[in-house]
Structure formats: C-alpha cells, structure tokens
Length: 404
Figure (cartoon, rainbow, N blue to C red):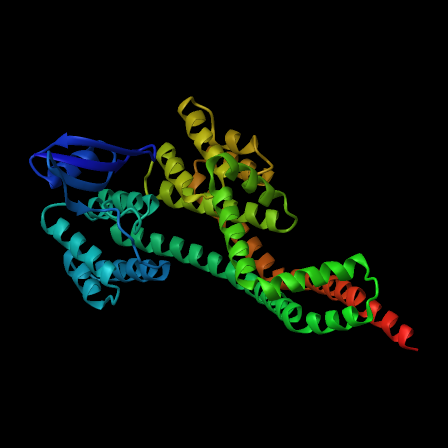
C-alpha cells in the first residue's frame, strides 16, 4: 500500500513524501528507526488521499496536566505497579478528553510490544523532544521512575518561571489597559463638550488642543473604523515580527531593552542549562542534547548559538568555547563554569548549579519588577495627564478672560 506521510527529521525539519509499506504502523516504525518522528500518515491512492491516522493535532494538554501526569506515573511505578496498569489509572482519572485519547494510545502501543517513549513520539505537541528523550534513556537504563520524577521537576521549574513572569506583568498590564480605556471614554464624552464651548467662542486654538480635538472627533464619529484599524495594525505587527526575515531584529531589540533584556537573558540561560543538565544526566549524548535544547529556546539568536555549538562539538571544539564566544547572550560565568564541569567530568551537575542560580536571579527580579515598573508608569501617567490638562485647560482660561 502507498501512504503519504509527514515526519520531523533528527535535524528538526518537516519532511513530506509518499512511501510503500504493508500498513501505516509499519511505516511509522520505519520512520522512527531512521531517527524521525511521524507526524501524520495517510493512505494514498489515485482517487485521492484518505486520512488513516493523524498525529499532528491540537494538543489541548496544559503544562500543569503534564506535571501531574509525570509525578503520578513516577509514584505508581516506584510503588511497583505495571506500566500499563499505571497508565490505565491515569487514563481513568483525567478529565481532558484529548489527553484521555493520548493515554489510551500509549497503552495500546505498549500492549502491542512498543515502548512508552515510542508511543510518546506520536504526539510531539504533547511530549516534547526533551520529554521523549529522557523517557527513552530511563527505559534503557532501567530507571524510568527516577527519570519521570526528574522530568516532573523540570516541568515544574518551567511552570513556576512562566507563572512568575506572567504574574509580574499583570499589574502594569491592568494599569495600562485602564488608562487606555479611560482615555477613550474622555475623548468620546468629555472632550466634545469642551470643543462645543471653543467653537461657540470662535477662538484660535493651540496645536496641542487641535490634536486632542482631532482624535476625539475621529473616535466619536468613526469608532468602529478606529477599532478595526488598531486591530489590523496590531495583527500586522505581530505577523511581521514572526517572519523569519524580521524575527532576528525583533529578538535583538528585546535583548537591548533595559531590565527586560537582562531578564530575558537570565531566563534563556536558566532554560538552556537546566534542559541540558536533565538530558545529559539521563544519558543523552551531548550533541543530541544540544539539538533538543535548540527546539526549547524561542529567541533566534540563542537557537543559532546552540546550533553552531552542535557543529563545533562535532569538530572537536569544547562546549564551553561556544558559550564563551557570546558573552552578550550568556554571562561570562556560564562559559567558565561549563569549562570547570568539562574538566572535572561533572558537567551535568555544574549545569544544574548554573540553572538554579539564574532561576533564583529571575525569581528576585520578578518579585521587584512591579516595584520598578510603578514609577515608570507614574511618569507616563503624569505626562499623559499633564499634556491633556495643558491642551484643554489653557484654552478654557482664555475663554474666561475673554468673558471678563
């Protein structure tokens, strides 16, 4: 039979093609044996394509659900439960219908002679490359419960880090939204009243006042057009920022922003070193660990550095040398500590120490972020209110003087 397939290669590239195989499961096995990850497999014939199985679907599994899954599975395996029985218990407990289907698929694969890691590879949007590689190493070493526990710790650290960043940004976001909403209401309901007074008097208005009136008239008469234009502008900006040709410039700008740039660098440092440490301690070779870590990072400059590090290592260059070449991305201390880890043979533990240090740094900065942002917001609010007051109240005094 012929099948049209889509797979993710070892290098992370998406490959599509048509291949002959006895069935879809045999083709999926063949792809995995070659180091790829099957994303979708469809029966192919001259009349068209009939979808048989699709691995690349919307996940709908939250990070907190994955943390609970790994911790519970680790606990049950440590208590002596068989893998399929432990998965069956978790499958019955979960209220997420999609995740329920994922767990059923894992159980079927294991009952059919497969492994947990091979079953997880079918769902790359649920189980990341880091997750699957660590599980595979745990299976080979016979320490799956301990490996799952380590995965749970890594996911929990990621969850806590994301939660702290989002929590620190809630306060300024709410304040800015309130200012924006109040400003629109004033432009629609307050300014037109003052504008009517100025028109009755027939006085010449300053440029700042004319600017405020122009915005007010635009919002009042064409609010839907204004809202549509704003939505289109924001959407276009986001889409433009995600283009490969422009993303590197936006990512560089973010790294140059005071305070935020430092926070981003420390977050990426913590994420890189913790991921590498987890993979290396699980038995994944350094080159493969770096390739997986590259997929975890979002900033294109960090991804390029890790990609170049893989090529350098294959040529015999040390990992620390790659990090030392880019002090603008990773602090100098990172390269020095990695070098010590390489010399002492304790690279994994040294990477974990680096991760813990910078996670604490990010924690401290996010705690103080609201305190730092507050005076900046006050200056911004003061400037906006001051501009509005000068633009609208000054002409009012002129009107009063003319009446006298």
